[in-house]
Amino acid sequence: LDHYVQSAACAALLINPAKEPVILAPPRPGAAPEEPAGYPQALAWFAAEHQVLLAALSLATGSGSDSHAWQLPWAMATFLQARGHHLEWAATQRTALDAASRLEDTAAQAVCSRLLASACTNLGDHDQARGHLTSSLTLYQRLGNRFGQAKIQHELGFAAERQDRYTDALGRYEQEIGRAHV
Image 1 (tube, rainbow, N blue to C red):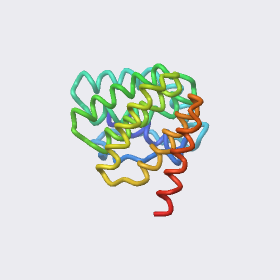
Image 2 (image 1 turned 60 degrees about the vertical axis):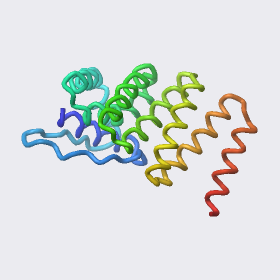
Image 3 (image 1 turned 90 degrees about the vertical axis):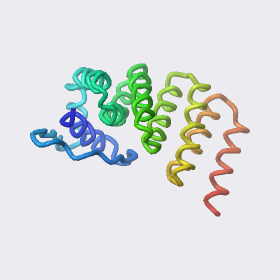
Image 4 (image 1 turned 135 degrees about the vertical axis):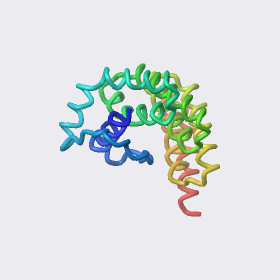
C-alpha cells in the first residue's frame, strides 16, 4: 500500500502541480515508489495502474488502513476526473471521507469533503455537492486554513453558477473579494 500511495502521489503532483498537498507518512522499508519522469509518464502510469489502485483501495479499506484509504483517492482524483471516471471518483472519495472520519483527521476530512463535492458537481448532483462543500468549509474554518476556505468559497460560487443561481454565485464572489481586503 505504501508503494501505491507514494507512487500515485508523485504521479498526481506531476499531472496537477497545483493540487492541494497532503502530508504522507514515509514509506516503510522495502516499499520502492515509482517516480514518473513527467506529465505523459504520470498519465500512462495511472492508466496502467488504474484497476490495481482500485484493488489497493479495497485492500486498504478491508484491512483498516485508513490513512491509505483516504490518501489513495486523494492521489487518484485528478486522473479519474480527467478521464471522465466520475462515478469511480465519487465512490473513491466516499471511501476516503469515511476513512478520514474514522481517523478523526480534520484536515483529511476537509480535503475529502471538497473532492467528493467536486465529483458530485461533475455528476450533476448539486445538492450533495453543496452539502459536502459546506461541511468542508466548516472544517477548514475550524483549522484556520484560509487557503482551503477560499477554495471552498470559489467552488460554492461555481456550483451556484452551474445551477443558474447567478445571484448566489455573485454573492459568493463578492464575499471572496471582501475577505481578500480584510
